[in-house]
Length: 325
Image: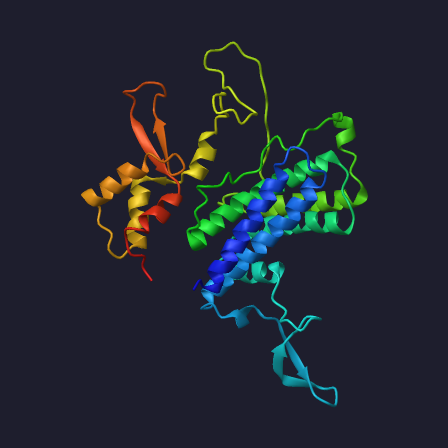
């Protein structure tokens, strides 16, 4: 039987995958609004899963309590679980959990600030509406950071395996068709949200592994140079592909060999760097979702190579080693 925290984690992952799939649809009229709703739902479920994991899967730790009221109307010293209109227990929401987990250093403050920004976009969308294309770009920037932060937190807390998912927002999911002079015409509500996001960006720790937002920039340039970067916007596997920057590759494959060995030593009770381990790594290196081979001189078969690994490799090694309690 699965632990409640694991069940919540799976629901959370399903919500985030749904958010990304909706956002990446070629033509979806309520794209930004739907993404923000589903992404926040995914984050809330992830925080609840972590909260339960840290509280021995006691479901009551998620319940909101309130003071009992005596018959004479005065408050009692004793508390009771607050109930919804249908009689189900109220549970703590995203803001409460994120704030408490930030205070205890479980959640990075920068990730919390990103959630604040995303919630503002969600609230602005749900309770009114957004019409500016520039505002859609801000959602792209904040939403991309929310997905990256989600991936980092899930892997850190649960060693979640995202290797089978295209876990990113397509940078071509929106197209700016109006002139720049038109793009800056935000309505009052959008300006207020934009101001808050800017404040959160400027006051957050720039050295953190997490982000409030990320810059999105894509350029197509004609070039006759032999070393020009070629790109594709097609599912055709024979087409030339977009090249990731080294920084993006490091985000996807953060473990070099020495860090992987250290990670294994800290993670497993029976880990030994021996031939058995080497054979496992040799086999896993063939999976491009797990290992990226970096060549000092690309294209030269004799070039020095280094191997970068995604954290998904740990999920595979878990099958062969015993995780420390």
